[in-house]
Length: 140
Image (cartoon, rainbow, N blue to C red; front, side):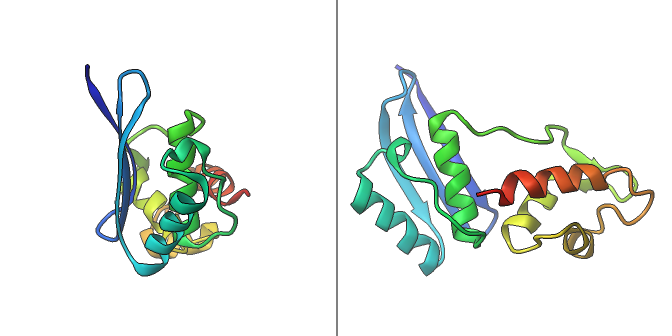
């Protein structure tokens, strides 16, 4: 039997992960993070049980809601990455993960993402991709 890991993370801030067997059976959920994130995860656990596949998607655009939404969708097998390449902005050499992390932390417009990361501030060809990621992340 092999063990797989499903996780969502704001690097250095909040992390939630679940280990599952190769048959999809949850083994353990572990999380670390700020009080708001911990409170939201505990509420889901207490209200809906230990299996994140059964948790409802949180509403809102707080970092806790966005991260928990990603995790639940990954557990349900419904998470879809909008952009799969490592580097998103080739002019400024900005990684896609950097853009994703900025959105999770509160950059909820393409202008804010550009200010926080410098992505899209040169030629602008990555701006439509930034907009697509924002739309996918912030849609309730």
